[in-house]
Structures are given as structure tokens and as C-alpha cells.
Image 1 (cartoon, helix red, strand yellow):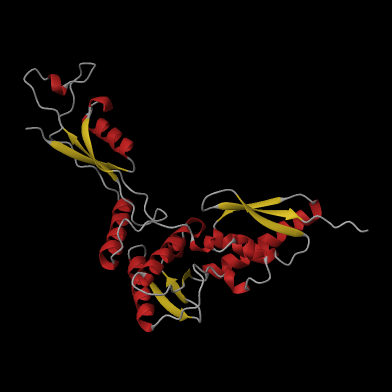
Image 2: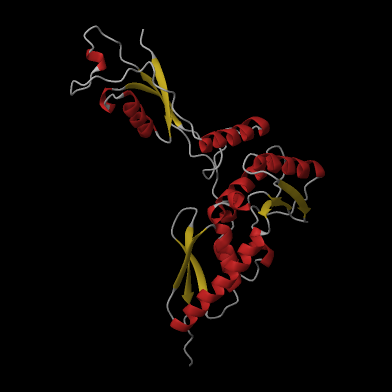
Length: 301
């Protein structure tokens, strides 16, 4: 009876390659079935699943033909092949994914949606009717006040998530009229924020999903780490004004980006009253570029 081994990797083809190298069997001669095609998860932070294949090991024959490759060289026996190594980083992803799925009932089918901030037309961010507060990282529109139970649920969920990412971090709650703001203090702020704030966005997305899973009305959630959002907003506004100065003096468009919807909105609002320039998002996908164009001067009659 043939025995089998399982191999994991980020994609099926990489799992096949790993099996081929480990067992010293050409890829085209491998007999395997796909157990899982894997999943990239939510922003690459949690819910990430490795592709997994099950490889049937060749039967050992008397002439040893099953244990030799095309060049006639003996293959390594599959009996003592070590189990595929799972790195500490991969294990952490599995732990966080398991935490979310088991403790809070979110399944792998809860795939990430486009950033909800995109659902508000970006052109609206250049209009005077858009409140300045809209640039504070809101994820949804509405004016729903959360009860204490939802606030506590969100705080506990956030605390449990960050405990698997870093240590010595605590959560403080600031409940505003239109949203719940969770401020994370301590721990490794760099890891919690991530590149371009991607990890922070993923955490905020998860907490919002957890809080609103059984709630009739959508509650607006905001997660900040050590004042990152306010600092980011100030830096983007300063950068936007420098780009506007450059565009205004040169008469040529300037490009900022790529940025997420939240950051683009901050730039839109920062320059909406500047009579020299106009802003427009270009490109596709979650991270789009923002172009600052010079406004055409009206000809005097």
C-alpha cells in the first residue's frame, strides 16, 4: 500500500516544487492531489491559508526502478523525509486566523471587501459639503451611537488580536457621537501599523466586522496606534500643500501615491479650497495614485 506525504506552500505550484525537491522526484512524475488551493486572507494579515497537496509516494520495487530518476540516479527514500517546516511567521498567521474564526465566528468566506471609504465618491471630497472630519479615517457613513456592549466587544476583540501580534499593548476607548475610536498604546507600534498602515487597516477591518456581525445598524470603528492617524493626516496635508505649490508654480501636474482611499481623501480635503489646483485619483485597485492638476486660468474678456 502506497504511503503519502503532505506539503504546504503559498501556492500549489510552489508546493509541488517543494515536494519534488524534497522527494527528489521530477515534478511531472509526482502523483498528488490538491487539498487546498490556499487563500491570501485579509490584506495578507489574517485568514491566510497555505496551499496544500498530498503526494502519493512511489511503491518500492525489487529492481529499485521506482526509486530512480530519469538519469538512473537513486532517489532519496521518502520514509525518513522530514515534515514540511512551518516558519514562526506562518504559525502566527494561523494562530491569528484561528482566533478570528473560532472566537468570533468569522469564516474564510468573509473575504475582504473594497475599503468602505471608497463607497463614498472621491469627487465628493473636493466639495465644500464634505465635512473636514470625514478625513479622520472613517470606514462607513452614518451616525449610530454604539451601546456599551458593542464597545466592550470591540475592545476585547482588538485586545485579543493585538496580543497575538505584540506584547504589552493596551486599548483605550474614546466613544464619539458618530463612531468608536480605539487607541492602542504600547507594544511594537511599527508592527501594528505595518507598511503604509496596511496592518492597522486590516485590524480595523476585523474589529468592525466583529462588532457589526450581529448588529442591526453599522457602527463606525476607528483604530489608532500611538497617534499614528493624526500624525499621518498632518504629514499628508503638509505634503499635499508642497505638491500644490510645485504644481502652481510650474503649471505642470504632480503625482502623489500610491495611496489608499483614506489617505487620498485627506489630500482631496486639504486642497479643496486651493484655487490654483484640482485633485483627481487615477489608476485601479485599492492603492491608486492622486494627481494634482493646475487649474486653467479664466481668460479675461
